[in-house]
Structure formats: structure tokens, C-alpha cells
Length: 465
Image 1 (spheres, rainbow, N blue to C red):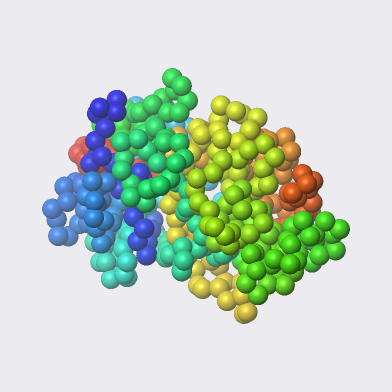
Image 2: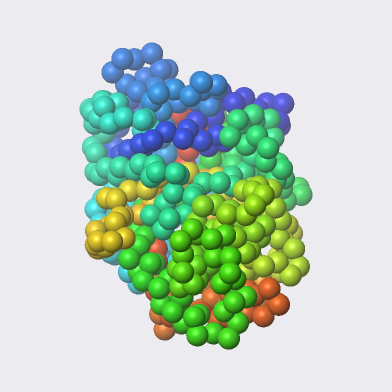
């Protein structure tokens, strides 16, 4: 099958990231089927001045200044006129959609779909999510105007890169991504993590599970080389996070083992000019995430955010007796080669993560309650076996390690102050249990979309009634 692999048939931003400064996601409804098909035909052809061309992977050995791609929901495929016998070959979780799968992925309480703002409050009308990447606003406006001629624009979500590649919680993001066979990615130079088979992200290729191929929807030209995306609007409670770091640091100041967490004679290794309380805030943040906020892995540098000499940000593993807590966000989402209960699952749930922040800047000296967060895409060949399995089994239940089973991910999990707990690790092997942190990230919308290949977009454009 790899002999048939054609990079030019893959939509961009799946196997390699764009890394542009801005993104605009257009949430679209198909209200004129013929107009939608004509748009797709011109977009995949790429020769129209009035319709943006779909960005293919091979078009950007030098990345284009403007990139345009689409994801189609199950209802969107139906609206385009996909025959029912072909719709029935798509996975159940995709057909049901994100809103109906909410409990499975932890979207309840404040994160429940009934609290999602428009347009995600009416998921049956969300047919396409079109994404435009650029470095300036002008091309975003131009492409949106072109798209609006063929579709009804239900909503717009704008994202941007924050300085230093960080998210609002202060962490450098997007460091570790899958790297694929047969794909040369300059951003992955020097990374020695295992190479993932194409079936991790694309339909029709072998996966890491021996003998397992995810079913390709029919007909072949529709399903082959496609992928799935869990598009998420995730609000980050920045004030709540920083407030909890204060509370936890104050609690730890009185703990008899506090000097094991931060050496009072070497606080500059954690952060210049920090006192003990400030250093403990950073230690709590690092252990909850699995990385210091500057991206340094806690596994490689448990005592210093600024190690000397520097360490790799990507090349590491988790070993027995690791100082990085098993319940940290990083280890839950990607346990690497560490010991887990589901031993065969170590590298089988890898996801491609793309995302940018949304919302106003945050000033810690003048905190406010304005919404800000992350527009995230979690891409893989199978929503159930990858995204939902990670969210349910690892993020929210901790089933891969008995020492954390029953606790949720401290950053992304569905926590409540009454039940939340997280075990910080000490050099002597003991732990300190933190409690009482709130849900720090909640869903504000989203959709499961199918990322069709170039051939599939052409197929959809040629459907007839």
C-alpha cells in the first residue's frame, strides 16, 4: 500500500504543520447543494481566481503564504448528496458526531453541548469547517468572502500564535508530534521518537497494531487517503489556573519535604528572581503538565527549568522510577515507552495536534474573566480508537496506570474541586497529594470532521442527484 502513497493526494496540515501566525475557521452550512459542489470542483482544480485552492501537501516545499483546507461532518456528506450506502460505511462515532459523544470525551457539566454557543448549539447544521492559515488578516478576509458566496457562514473562530509559541497557561506548545514514514518534515530534524506508520493518520495504510487496518469508507476514491479530525474550541481558565498555583504553593510551603521540590539555595535554576513560593508555583505547573513552562521535559530535568547544559525537548522516554508524575498531562496523552497496563497500546493512540490560541491577551497583573483558549484539531485515522480512547481511558480515567486510576488529567480533565487530586513526585519516591483544583479547560464547541483526500473532494464535487 505504501507504494501507492501519493503525498499530492493529501490535504496539507495533516502530516506536516503550516506554522502560520493566524488561522480562521469558518463554520459552514450547505444550503445550495449545486453551489457547494461547484465550489469544491473549482477548489480542487485550483485554477479559479474566485475560489481558493485546496492546499495539498506537496505544494509547500516552500510553504504557501495562504493555506486553505476543509473538513466535512457526517451531515455535511449527507448534504452534498453522498449515497446512503456509502454513508453507512463511515465509523459510528463520526456518524453520531461530537455532541452525541459528549459523555465519552468528558464534555458534561459546564462543558456539555447544551452550553455551547452558536453555531455549535445546532450540530446538525454544521456541515463543513473550512480553515484558512496566513500571516496577515487581509487574505483571511478575502478567502472568507469567496467561501461565503457558496455556503452559509454560521460562525467564525479566529486563532493566533502567542509569543514564544506558548498557550495562555504559559506553556510552550506543539513540541512533540508524530513523524511519519515516507514524509520528510524539516520541523522534525533531530527527533528520535519512533516513526509512525501512515495508518496512524491516513485511511488505507497499516497501523502500529499488527494486522490492524482501520476500515476505509466506500467507494475507494472517497475514503482512501482521508483522515478524521476532532475540532475543539477549548476555553482555558487562566485566572483559575494561576490562582490554584498560588494555593498549592502556599500549601507546599508548610510541607516537611518542601526542600525536595525546590532547593532553596538554587532557585535561579527554576526561574530568575523567584522566591520559594514563586519557585513552588513553577514546580506545580511543571509536574501537572510534564514539562516546565519553557518546554523542558520534567523527565529530563526535574530540578531545573533552565538546565545547564540544555536538554532535548523531544528525545526522552519514561522509565521505572521516573520523576515525571504518571498523572501529568504529558504522560497521560502520550506515555511513550513507559510501563502502562495496556502495554500494547503505548504508541497506538498517537494524534496529530494542530492548534492556535484565541481570545485577548492576558495580563496577570490585571486578570479578567474574558474568554480565551485554544482552537485545537486532533487528527487521526480513527476517532474512536485514538481521540476518544485517549480522552476517556487516559485523560479522564487513568486506566493505563493503577496509581492514577480514578483521577483525571489535572489540566485537561473533567475535574471538580470536591473530587480532584494529583500526586506530585519527590526524589525519594514518595508523593505529595494535591487536591481541590477546578476544571481548568472546558469545551465551547466542536465537531468531528472527515478530512477528504484531493481525489475524494473531486468525487464529492461530481456527485449528482
